[in-house]
Image 1 (cartoon, helix red, strand yellow):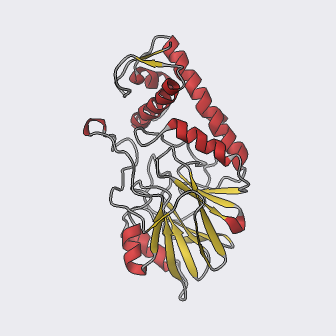
Image 2: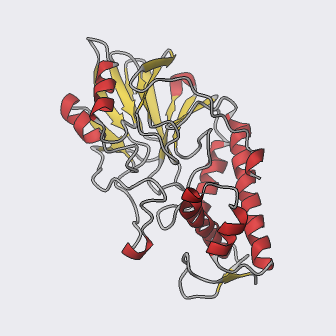
Image 3: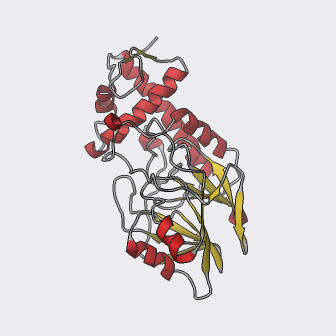
Length: 304
């Protein structure tokens, strides 16, 4: 059950205010609250003097101004790491780069896009199709400044190009949308992939991070137990989907109506894509069969 996840949702902030979170971490939150962004995009400033800015956020002039105002008189931005290319994370990288000449860093451009008949722009974050990083970071690559080092941890699932960034000096992981304290992540095919997401979660269990800083919401201070709860939740969701198939629901819309009846209906579109992601995973494991030639939202599914 979702209730078994120890969500953390309390966060003290003001829009545009720069808060000191640790010796090496500051945060400014953008005024873009919503069902997928919680209180808004949390932009992290790493280091002192020569700094990195993780996920500068959406195209909001006041937020870009607030990031610049958070810098001291002798500070400059040298790197702009991007966790992934959704419109609440990466679009402000371009104007921030123009102001500072900083290098943008990321895994690459956005991956596979949905066809025109599968758009769900009202059901999840939009795609930033304009972003291409100056510095391509593969898993294990790092960037650094005076007193700080950020290592890329490739965590596909929410998107294929999703990176977390590990701040070695504080054993802190900037987890983007891969692991958030306030909510589970949307896994929306075709670029989102449940099999990759589950493998990425398992990988985090092998790390020694002591704290996660998601792009939305407060930090996660017990990361291993939290990740284990996420894995258990996804495994339970797949068991629930198979139970609905056994009960005779062979369409995703019917499964969503049964499993998400107490969830805000504005989120049912995103939930449908999460169920589709689970279906793809179950079909790959040969635990579910698709009766149509193509796996999709309108396809018919059944147990073997």
